[in-house]
Amino acid sequence: MKERVIRADYNDDTITIYQAYNELIANHAVLNQTFVSPPFKKERMTWIKPSFLWMMYRCGWAQKENQERILAIKIKREGFEWALNNSSLSRYHTEKQDSYDDWKVELQKSPVRIQWDPERDIALNPLPYRSIQIGIKGIAVDKYLSEWIVQIEDITEKCKSIQNLINKGLKNKAMELIPQESLYPLTQNIATKINSF
Image (cartoon, rainbow, N blue to C red; front, side):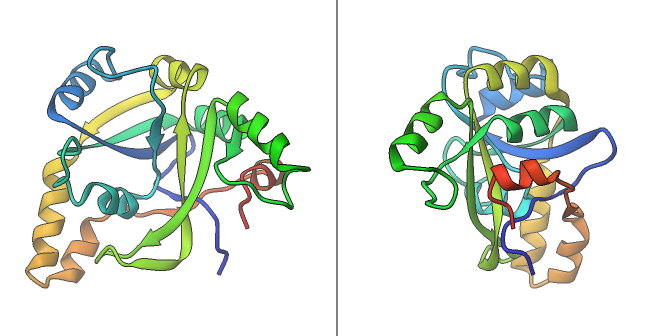
């Protein structure tokens, strides 16, 4: 099994990513079908995640403070791939950069940051392969808000229903409600840039 590949719910045109926010930001986002500033803070880095279960791990099934609302956001694949093409790895890798200083310069200049964290199973336990998290700032956030977003859906209640089934020991029923994610195709150039293998 490959250790670092992107698994996602996608079609020919869009890919679904997940974010969790507080009530105010989420309400404005669903109403306007994009993130509105304020209350959304454009100047901050925002993280998008194509893994549903990693999002559940991060927000604790919508139980963590300021992460009480979970949004499924369909964005254009061309935007998603622009982000990957214009990214820098969040950690220094000797095989990727000539020097630590070169990496630091690249990291500061890049509008997109790539991080790989252990994927999670339905019980939110770590799995032996990694899931991508994509941090965007500056021009990438501008493009995200104005060009990439196709649809924003509040899936909080669905997520809570899945957690409720898990708590009742109905794992198979819970699995039926989890979005089907499959291997996302990458060009060799993108795969090399984001250290996917």
